[in-house]
Image (cartoon, rainbow, N blue to C red; front, side):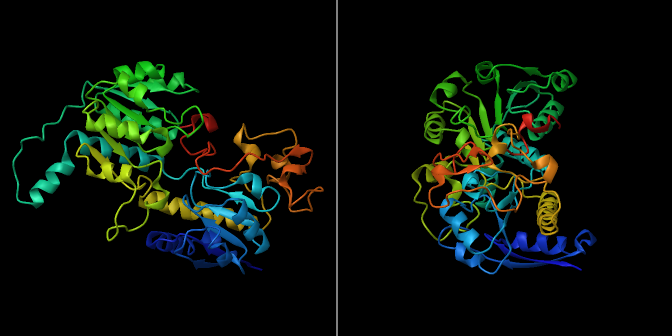
Length: 406
């Protein structure tokens, strides 16, 4: 008998509908009847009521699932939040513990992000964006469009997970010298590529191109700041397709205005939640820093689209639906996450290997729903730290310590 699952799909875009619609026809899901209701609205405390009458919620990076939303979803009967993304810093995992399962898509297409990074680099380096706009105005002059050969220059890559390694291979193919920085260095990879692991200060000083591909942790927050920029070459180009919070944007803008560095190619922004993925063409941009970035000629900014390829969208849809199907059929959830997973994926009472899930749907030990600060699950206290969507909880497919693979 086919399982029927009603899904409230938030922040739905045309490409989501298209690729999930195509994935539903895959014979892989012939044993499950997915009943998807698409909502344009982001998931928040104001829209959580739309989940009423559904079994699961499908959410994206800018859907905010805090303690209030978690309580509303639980009251609505939701037992699974299926994230169609790798990052989960927008989810209060402590509030979800033993209430609602959370699963994600840990990897989809690292090639898409690495290739987009190169697109940003070459657009900046050869000033393609400037030339394109000039020619549309009938200006075919070449003055001011001088670029630089990448051959023989030095590329510094911070974070050598899947995406960072693919980018290193691409830039090595350009004939660039490759410097790497990572808390979990892969010496075999570096030797194979002829690259070298160095400390960050050395990378900042020697690199002509600096690309960020690491998770947002307390140690990494604002790694690009006034002090680190002061170490860089004046011809340096900074690329960020990782996390917006890796860069102190105010310091970056000042450096760009003062020609302290050559340029910046950005696919993420630390305050992107309000603007990215939406059409603001008929409204003013009230974020002064974002508005300044858009105006600077030595900046190329895209709206978190590095993942947006046919291959990635297809994989996101397939894995998300697989997560929902497995949950509905009571199977193991290999892509489930909980707040205990934030450390090293284990804690003394972890039952994932034996049960296939971070926790079972059996009645929990005595807990206080009204006073979460008193809650203890299986003898482990629930973390009561204040939830912040800019927290370090963003284990993504470019985390080198996750599996060490490319």
